[in-house]
Image (tube, rainbow, N blue to C red):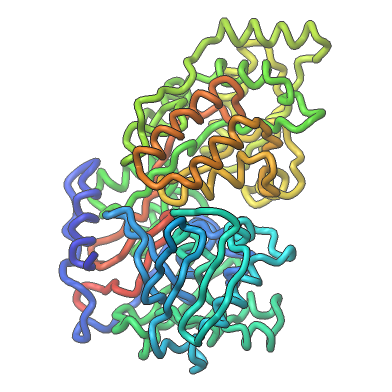
Length: 520
């Protein structure tokens, strides 16, 4: 899809809450080279190596992609994967072997030619046990690789996977120059990966916790690159970020909190949103020895949560309130299946049953210390205590600390958390969290029915099949829940009228290779 079409879409989305600011029209051409852009992000990435990155837009996805590009890319309008650094990617008849051809003559920033063996070595880095991020699970779908010539690589998968291009549109598809990695070592490479990517930008400055600055490559394979400098900074809080956009300190801002997004749209800022299902809710640790190992308590927690009440109290009615796995606005996936109903009487009955079995009624609730999460936690605590829980609230930790307690230590009973399921890469996202055999299943969830449904979802070849399977998953989660969902949410890249040609891809990640500054 052309940059000019995307600009039109951005303007249309921006009108959701008010009259949209006119977005710079046209596309990046040689006569538009110039200018700089500053983007506000949610978190500063802890390193710039795609191996070891969470991959999400809020934690470095856009920055890392600007340096390394991806083999494949996700077109959010057509909802299909398209070749990017790759020239082509084709499967065999049963989707177990995929053959990729690279574009000819693509060079890293240091001048080395990108070859197929580099892709193989890159995937092997992601597959290493040293990689503790979710990209390892994505990469392990590849059982073996062979390189018949410098531009061709064949991926043999562990089983059929019709949606395999998703893997190569994520961190796994960001090829790092193995010669630079070997020379620096992984730790130093993450801090200074200059010359090791084939993306449109080269690193100029990486000051963790302060800023990341990049400069455009004059010889980018997909050029020209119009915006000559990108700067990424993190401003605490959504309102502070939005204020910086208003004053012009920021040109682009990644927002996650519904009230701030509604304000930005109402003020006419252009909007590039991504819808996340199971975006806000209570995740329950159902591992043995935890209170939520008792399915009665998990059902009680779900029945105790009123999505509409949370929306009113916390989000001023601006959230996409729902208890369902799939929100009705999700293109191609919504089957009409509704989530569990708010039923405090049922919740009280189930809590009483568990107490008669010897449980003392106490449960720990973890939340990060951002204002919106503190308010969510207070609302959830009240709802749970209304049905008989004794809630011990822990909300004095940063988001990074909470992520560590949940994903690494698994030291929690309940946590205010967003599993974040998008309609692209759905199997990969759900499988790593809900499959009983997944090493990234930090919920302790194990249900053989869900494992079977996930296996079917991986091999689905049509939206209709996916829709039917996801409806079945809703039934399983109604009976054996692990998340008490109260909202889907939109993560939104809002931006000023001086920036045009931004391309939204998977998981809220932006591509800047076709972007430009008006009047540059």
